[in-house]
Image: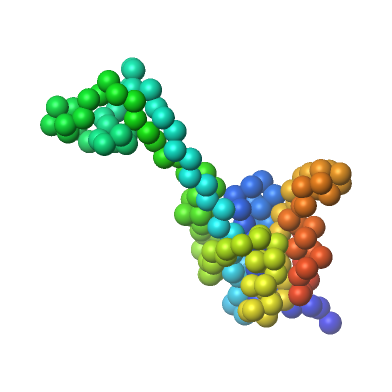
Length: 169
């Protein structure tokens, strides 16, 4: 008797491994109306504020923050363009990761969920909470020693999961 996976969780972080996992999850859920696919990502945004040298920069600044696309002369803003300013840079944007997942999934009916905390523990706790049958994760591509030293998330999910885990390579 074939095994049916009705509640599938796809762990997605925008990496190459999770892109492969997304392709695999899409293939498993495609055309099966009984399958519920939930794409999860774990909140890991980092915001870095940097000083930006204004020399040669054509963008406008307002109260120390760079403004792009506003056609106002510097004198009307009341801020000298010769002063240094700061710029916030966001990495690991949850919005960008989820946008990319939605774009890649396309026509499939899927749910999207942002989790917080330790990635492996959060994914496994969510799987238990919704009664998932399968978690699909991507392979990190790290060797055994590197994975051991840094605490490979894929390995932790496979060890802690309350259900089957499929690792996309």
